[in-house]
Length: 110
Image (cartoon, rainbow, N blue to C red; front, side, top):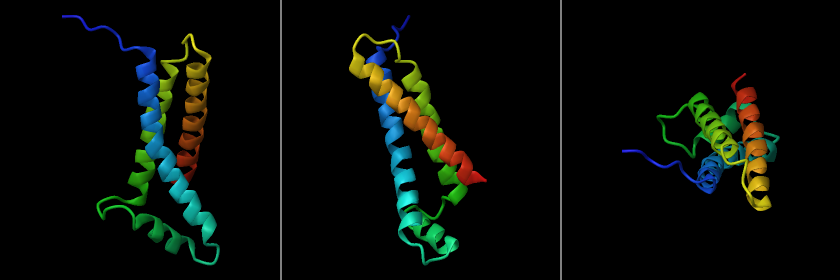
């Protein structure tokens, strides 16, 4: 049995789906850390961790965000050579946003 390769639009949609959780996590992180200047960094981190179950640590959430961003970049890079300009621009935007989120996640680990 042989399987046919998936259409490039499918890769692009999968990339967008993988990018959404990474965007959400970064949005939550930035909104909590920029919104409350008067609280300590440990209190801000505790506030961020309150939205997740107890089994996750801050480092594991950063790894999850990094994994989603890298997967989004990988899937979007598979769909660059498409005929329609809209899909190519979408692929480029997913790669750029995914790379930015991956870079932010790496700096959060330091």
